[in-house]
Length: 107
Image (cartoon, rainbow, N blue to C red):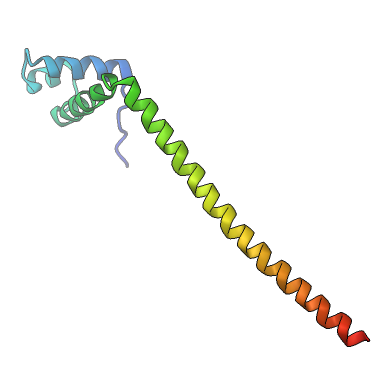
């Protein structure tokens, strides 16, 4: 029979991770108090500390990143449209050439 994994609420994870970050107790003590494996607490602590960086990121940086992503997307679309336009011009030229040949054969 398979092992059922416990699922913890985000608020519980945050509380445990915060206590681990404070380092007032060892990870083993926190683990025994909450009934969570020490490795899991270390993971939550790592996620919490890495996630905090995003909280203090400058808003201008975020806006600049969004702007750069938008510009990249627009350049991608322009490139795609150029390829499509080139293909249409080629097809249109081929179509006109074929019509000329067909009309000249009829005469």
